[in-house]
Image 1 (cartoon, rainbow, N blue to C red):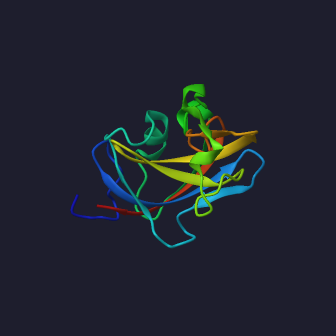
Image 2: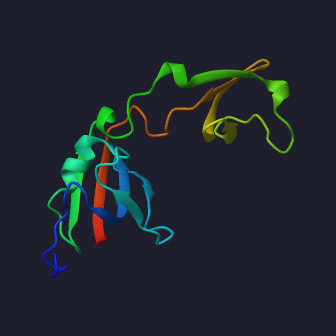
Length: 147
């Protein structure tokens, strides 16, 4: 791999990519281009789904590829076990219980963000699923570099 213009993504490559995600209605969900900070992906480390990884194999530096993945291959299906309920008095003025707020909870393994989905009396419903779980997502990948 001395000529980087001929290098192609392999199963053990580390890559820098810009990722733009669109929902099925065509609206933009997120993009690394907003802050001009490409994402580093280490192929084969199980941080992305096998279907996502398969779409990247064979790309060369400078390539752009657009593909759509169903929920299970994108951010997974929404898991009902990831929905929890807390008493409203656990919230404060600094961290209010407000629908749509994303609250980060400290867990033994690190931090876990959850979105407040519903407030019913004194019960607050918090969804710890990825915000795009359960959705078909279109990805636009711009391969910045193969490291």
